[in-house]
Length: 381
Image (cartoon, rainbow, N blue to C red):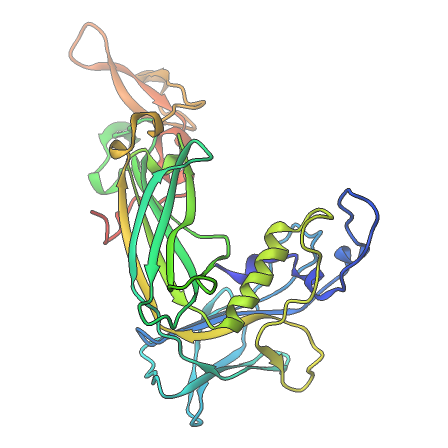
């Protein structure tokens, strides 16, 4: 989950307010200008990679996205004094790979922003993550569609607290297949590598996904719901894949994400959790009262991917391609070229040569207009 999406986190730093109204009451402070630093950082001890995202919080009432924090100096420090600088790759993201991570050491994050403010996390002990037992789908019991569920366990009973994130990738098609184009005053075939009929789109998870077995005798997570895909979603028309990443959390990290989940995803009425301070493990070194939003953790990660073919779903839950508002029109050869559209099929008269063509809009013939790319992912089956 990307912490930058919490544009309304300013209110998390305000005291809970009381009201006798049953209706939702937005406190005036939601319109105030805010500039709190937001830090979302982690180190994956499995592959030695570090990833940190810096941004600035904005007011709850704002429609703007969280602005990235640029030109910062970031490093990961171990308990023996070694430092590993991260590289800025753009848009507030800082990364490093091939770090030598030792299970016997503790690690913390250091951040210096462009205005020379310094931030530091607490030292973190590495958590080992158990493997994912299985990921599967089943018809939803509450909605029309399918639920994606995960199962995992730790036989040593040392994990207890889990967090998941995922990436969804799905294959889809444009409504019409355009294989011709008007070029240099003639109709030519579009090369296969330039086709825009079939696309793949990848979307990250957006919700906080955490689970705990703390109240169970065994350290088992059974059929935890990751996401729901409704019937007639474009995701499952042809083929869908989900890559799930699992991390073990400390109790402190779990409590942080749980509090954040309660306030950001349920806030809205008197009966929802009221705004309160959500404290992470990152602090301003020189000004402890300066609010910082975010959490830094270190641990191993486990991944698992599954594929779902649309044809394998029950008939009553399958998705089918819709033409929506897409229509085809005709154009005679003498009226070419068309200003905004793509050729679809030739139209023949009495002779062997076409007298015109059917065509449709770019949005109906170019799958990229829906957000995807025509390059097949390397992992695609």
